[in-house]
Amino acid sequence: MELQTDSDLYAIIKMSASFGKHNNLVWAYIELFGITPMRPKTKKIRILLEEMKTLFDAQAFNYQKKRYPISQAWIAEALNVVVHRHFADRLESHNYLKKIMIGISEREAGTAGRVAEKTLRKKEDNLRHPHSRPYDTPEEQVEPPVRAENFTPEQIAANKLRLKDLLKSME
Image 1: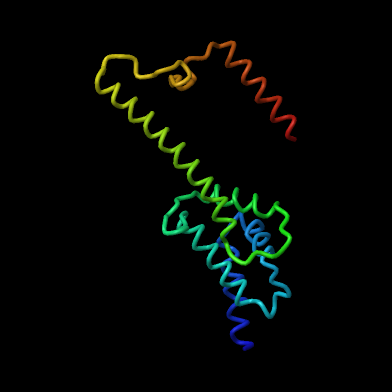
Image 2 (image 1 turned 90 degrees about the vertical axis):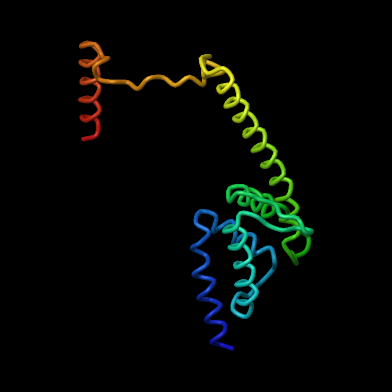
């Protein structure tokens, strides 16, 4: 029994690092399952962390025989929503998290679809009218890079003064 607990603890520690900046959020979510004290419940914690790691790695989940893609950033957003909700009882499954993620996933898919459609229409317009202006709005126009030969002697002198002042202030 002690050997199993030690291997579970080792797996828990190893998996914790895989969540990166979302580690604290995942642990706050795991705490909602009411698994305390930790020592006798290491197997349950390891299983929950494995499920979360699978979710983060796959960036998708299944719910009622349907697959939903979702990015890690949106998984973290859903976890944040769940963690900040006050539950009367402890969680028994990931179903509430999945319901939150379904809404986010569908919204994300709709946004991605609109962006893809807009990009496709721009490409189509460029193919139909190759000599027309390639940008729809002035904000989309790319400005040429700033080159040293484009500066006047006065601008160069002013930049040198600013640089000297900056270096003095850092000392």
